[in-house]
Length: 216
Image (tube, rainbow, N blue to C red):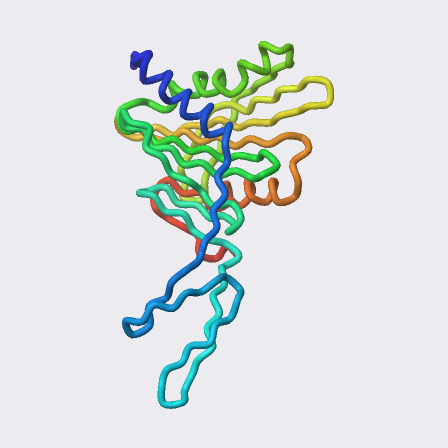
């Protein structure tokens, strides 16, 4: 399929913007009890008067793993690394998840473009600055089979410069006129939470709307 140049730039721009910024989210929660709003904070107990001398103690906690669902895209993540969703236009929806240390997960869903054709484009968007600065790049074909049976194909890309090292996996799954492109990235200084985020993502990822509820 011949790709529209403007479309390709849009998808690549979305990748560049996504990997250049990470959003942090925090806030209060409101529980409505019999029509009465009750403000709660995570891990902070609250006492609620029920009347007639009765009260209850409420405590709001987060699960160790949460499930992200967007259409047929499903995966699990720790509460600290909340995914964000953005519509880029032209039938592209992007989901981003990242750690403060720089490990990143990017998923782009295409409605009208073969994602296999985007692997090289996204690779260039992620590595061209490094290559232009003298980094050494090596790549090799890779295949990843998900728990739902989906097979993704693409590349693993390794870039090095002095003491800096980046490992990226860029794979795609085509379905009908569109499909998914998935990127995971981490540096050699990635911490244990970084590795855990990426490992849990790949272990739980489904592109067919399924989720393994046995994952802890």
